[in-house]
Length: 112
Image: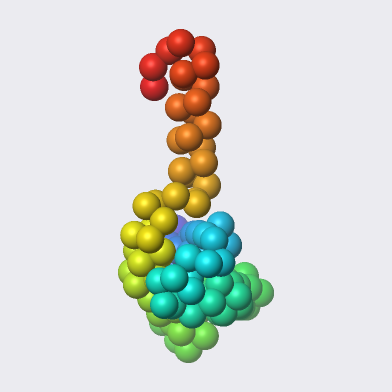
């Protein structure tokens, strides 16, 4: 793969991660953090991801790719940390997996 294909893959994965993370967060946490609503972020990030999946990722010449990348970065560096600070990092899929593994360890007598 050439460097532009790697860059396109990274951009697509970043947008997918931001969308999935936004979808797994609680609605009330967005309001409590004084950020836009969960619906707003799902629409913006979902459109950014969908347009890249439909038309392809063009990190150099596509305004839509770059605008979607900016939206994903804003979500990841501003909105996500504010929501995690309010919820104590709870609410995401990784946290649920960790709790499940810890509870299995306690029930089985083992340690995680």
